[in-house]
Image (cartoon, rainbow, N blue to C red; front, side, top):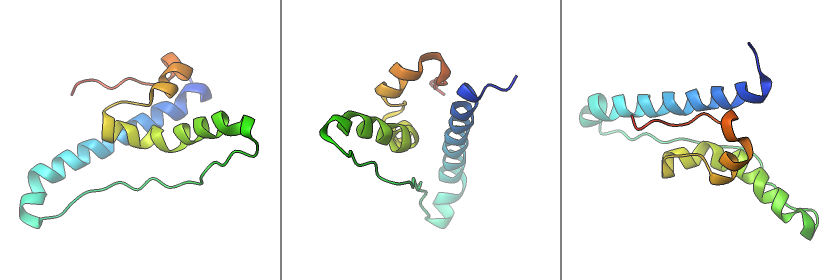
Length: 96
């Protein structure tokens, strides 16, 4: 049942959930002993508009590249623009 229009979002969703679970375990079990911290690194290239009419497309590209992987950690959910565009293709977070 491969579906390339969904699979990439599902894989990324599980990556985010796995990071959150690992961070929770680390904070509960190891941070008190090791005094360590956990972070996340999001890398990629910046999108610059070539013309004034490209500004909106460049901003949307940045949302899909950076905010996709950072908003869930900082705001608890995917960016609204992604949810509007992808609708049911984008997995949903549960309260847990």
